[in-house]
Structure formats: C-alpha cells, structure tokens
Image (cartoon, rainbow, N blue to C red; front, side):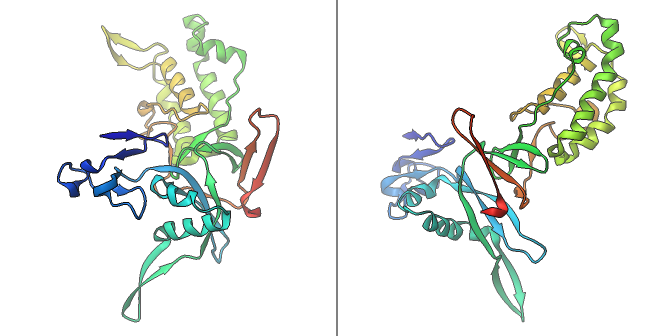
Length: 289
C-alpha cells in the first residue's frame, strides 16, 4: 500500500513494503526516529520539502549556499517551536555536506567547515534578485528565470507567423540579433552552461537554415529558423521550460539552469518577499540575515 503525500512527490509506504519485512524490495526511511519501518512503514527515498540557506565563513569573504530540507526531517522540525532550535537542528542534519576528510600527522580526521543556517525555510519557487536579475529556486541545484524578454511589434509579428515568407526571411537575422542583445544585457543567469556565449556563437549556424522547416511526410528533415526562434523563446520564458538547440551546438537543453555542485549566492543577493496580492514587496539581502 502507498499513501501519496502532498510535499513534492513524498511517498509513504506501508510496513509490508519494507525490505526488512521480506514482503517488498524497498529499503524504507523511518518517518520518525522512534518508528521502525517494519512496524510503521516509511519514506521510499530522500525527497526535499523545501530549502534553507547557509552562510559559510571564509577568509576571502562569506559564501552562501542553498541546501535541501528533506521530507523525513519535517516531523522533528514541527516539534521545534522557535527558529533558533530549527536552525540548530538543520545545521546538525546538513553538516555532512560540509565535512571533509583530511590527513593530519598521519591520522585521518574529519573537518567541518565553519557555517551557520541563516534562513531555515525557503519555499520552492521563492523569488530572488541575484547578479542583476530576478530568478526563482526550483531546488537546491536548479534556478529558474524570472526576467522578461521585451520585443518590438515587428519581431512579435514575425514570431507569430503574421508576415509574408519573403519578409520573414529578410527579418530573421534582425530578430535573432534583437533577442541576443537582450540576453547579453539582461540575462546574466544564462551564463550557466555558457548559454549566452553559445547562443552568440550559434548565430552562424542559424543563418544557414531555411526560414521554414522542411518535412518528408510526418518527419522533419531540416529544422527551420522559425522553429529555432520559438525554441529560444521557450528557453528564455520565466518558468522551468527547456528546449533543444542542438543545431546551434548547445549540448545542454536551453534553459536548464542547473548547478549539480549546488547553488551559491552572493552577499548582495536579495530574497524578495511579496504579499499575496503582489502590492507590497520587501527585499532582504543575505548579508543582513
């Protein structure tokens, strides 16, 4: 039996599903420390409910890192009524991420970086302002764009297919340049995976394409400039969408703003808090937490 939870694909399995019971093939994680999975069941894996931000103290200047808060920790966190206790609990839980094994005088020792939890509860899709651009956090390793792209009326007509073929072919380069110019000026987030540099270098390949895609029956045999521009816009949308720009030699899906080593933020990064109506907004720099 499974009980589907509401916290981002949290799955709580019944005791009979635990490997230890001999009835299933899953090694479950206890929902609480005092509840053995053989009796009470547990979680099927490590899922993240929300995030926290830590300050890493460094001689060259403080660093700020985003860390995941696992669903299996929530029961204990809810029992802690004050924020200081929650921060201390989270620090203990995530300490292994900041622990390095070193050899000192022939002895292997574990050294924990000097860090502290400064923001214990950061929701998925929380808005931030970092390095001149708004973004949201999809996880402890994924950023999502929040910067809007503004194009002139002619470019919009071209992208909507409202112009004649000849005019579209003539304006394709101009619109590519218009999009690229905005990306280079207002989308620093797209330095992730070298997207900005590769989009610029990809213009030569773009110019060799026909405006319309070419088909052999139901199979596309040659992608066209019109499709490529649409895919560029998909990757630049203020959401998690990605697109295939392999024809421009972008090997990573365009718009996948992932840092597998984790997300680091600067002291000047601001958390953006908004009222439900969006009428009131407050920004707090990480350095002030």
